[in-house]
Image 1 (tube, rainbow, N blue to C red):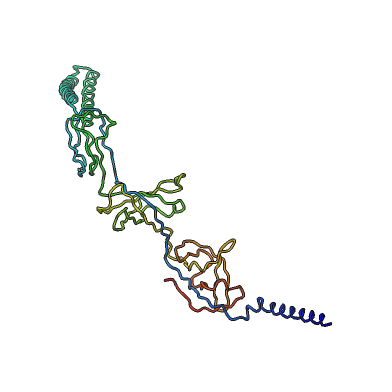
Image 2: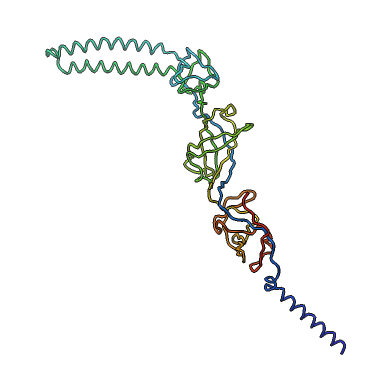
Length: 348
């Protein structure tokens, strides 16, 4: 009998504790005290994504100086490392044969012109036919054309600076025999430089002519600015990057053609971005959520994110300016929970 009484007491105890546990369910959560948390007031602000890529400084123009024709160098004036004006004579090739041919043609032209003048007088009195006069006139024009061709050939024996620029090292000597394949020297236009760099393909639409970029050369002490000139017309399939060229108008001694540069880009800039602390975003299996505080209740809302930095993330969909999102105590909050905000923070 005592044994049955003991069993009945045990069953009664289990039923009592089971009922107590049920009272601690969702209904009990509503009767508990509110969860203490911090909020964040959503306000629009201007943000942009910072991307750092590597680049190279290039001269605005760079040309390898070569001869157009073969010949022996009879005059040489290449001041290595100096800035020379456009049109300066750098190299003169032997042109004695061409000069002799030019003088011969000029004498022949004088005789042909006098003959053409006599033929014109005879034509007026019908002393010759029109055909004879036309042949004399054709001879004059042919000689003029030959003279012009010879002068062009003589001009090709002169190698001049194509533009104002800084000369490189001289690679020939006086008396050398040059061919069109030989490089005489190089010339660079150094008043302005070009900055060339490549950006990931996802930013291809974010960079265009007129955009400003900041860069610092390797070992440099300060930041410099360049203006985007143009971009390549397609993304490189191997690297999945887009090549960009920018013009550097600044003439600083740090800026030397060929040096490595770190380029700082401000991409995806927007003036009305809604930024919230990253800890306010709750990852889900198929998306992301935030908890909205409305004063008398809370709401779990699906959101989409955009630009991110070390502390904040942009919300592109799901929030409005003026919303208050909860940024602490997130693990303790359930859909039926009551929340009391200790403080409401704003973007600093």
